[in-house]
Length: 141
Ligand code: RTP
Ligand code: MG
Image (cartoon, rainbow, N blue to C red; front, side, top):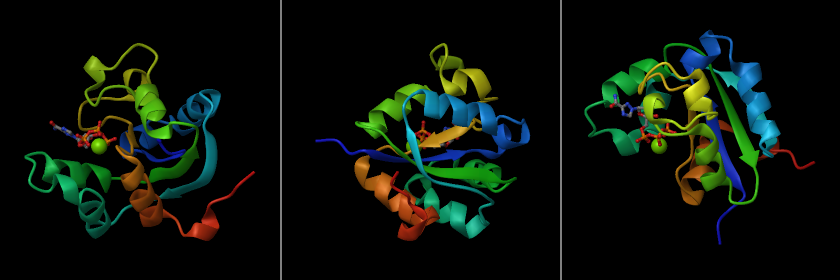
């Protein structure tokens, strides 16, 4: 049984390029409900913690530097089968491989500056939601 929640971040490239509104429109038009939402900027310590699973990967330093380079938009989203549905909406990690109409195909610059994050499991969606939001910042409506 898959869960109803995912955590997204609109990454610094997409924020700087003025895509917040269009990306949120794509997300809501795809049937996701926004349960929590904020503009924020990660500290180096925040980004290292958030991406701890990738700390041995060769791109870890570049990833952290990029994610703290400007503000991001964090959001908790609700939809049935949220993880898989949202990863389908955002497209492949490398925007050159992302399907037509996906958020990364439309808005990403490169594999590093790839516009948006989506949780990769139900378990991580809860961990990542707790990272960005207190439970009272999540709304049901
Ligand atoms: P995300 O976690 O951001 O939703 O992306 P993802 O699952 O599609 O990709 P993941 O393997 O979790 O990698 C996390 C982020 O690291 C950056 N990356 N850079 N330079 C590279 O080869 C490389 N590979 C990955 C991307 O920003 C990716 O979203
Ligand atoms: Mg990932």
